[in-house]
Length: 392
Image (cartoon, rainbow, N blue to C red; front, side, top):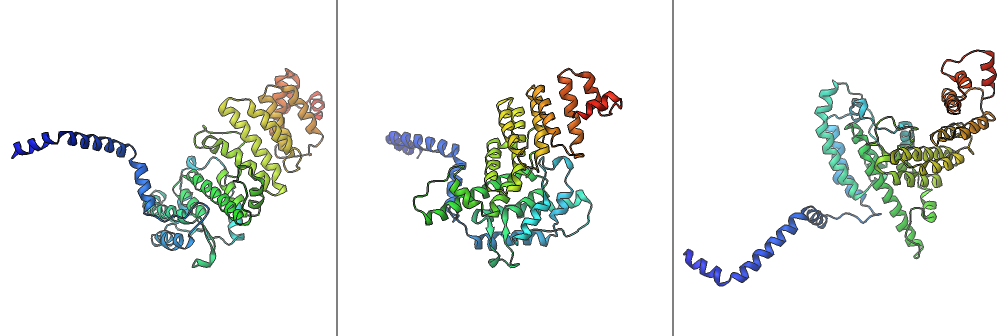
């Protein structure tokens, strides 16, 4: 029997070799592209709406409600879990929770509030983690169909912003920075949705570029867009990075930070502009340190100059310009800035200790050591020092 099989193989050896080569090449291609292939097959079996469109009913009934039911059935308190996280895991950019809650209440958005549970922290967090992860997976699926769910189809008659619910989930899991990609996806969704709606009104509208003023003019009237950008950025850029630049948004997405801060400049209220100029300046200072590129410092100087025009940011702008000139090794300009600041300096201000430190460092760099000693942490109360301090 084996001889018959062998004769048949030899008879069709050319065909067999072709088939083997074909299967070998096919197998290599399938193995190397297995993830792309699985993703392609996955998308064939789903009915996700195109970018800029949504299916809120499917997102709500098939995924959102089961996710919330899972948390409620297992008595999960996300706020308690977030408060039990180690301090070193908290985000490097401050979150303004009062701002979040004010926005959510104003526009009737649903959010998960405290249930005031009490339990030993380690045991409670470990027990509930698996249920939170299960809900996170369901909410991620919901987001593929819709980022937001209107109040008219919800049981509580409240609007639902799924990225914010996911943000609460990530905080409970002690990985708050992971939510940034969710907010970025939502920003892109809002931009594409607004663009598609504009197409119906004006057939020849150009594709929106990063700074397409027509598109931004429309997005300016969508409060959710500004809220999403602030959630992505974290509201405030710190003056200096305390920890190593690993999980910081400026290290993860430097172009994105500058892009979205510039978009905020266009859509934000007038009273916020000074703070935005300060944030852009601080972002450039940090980027100059990360990349060892002094060109960022000149950009920072331009933004600080803009911040000087607003009363809310004037003091910070002057002081940080002085600090910037010290970084650029130009103490003469730092001293000039400090003298200019004297004309608008209030009697008392929160940044007073930083101001005197700047004066001390500036005078030291200029080798005015005797005068600089008058601005040390502990003031020298001589008549001469009092005279010197009166000039600042």
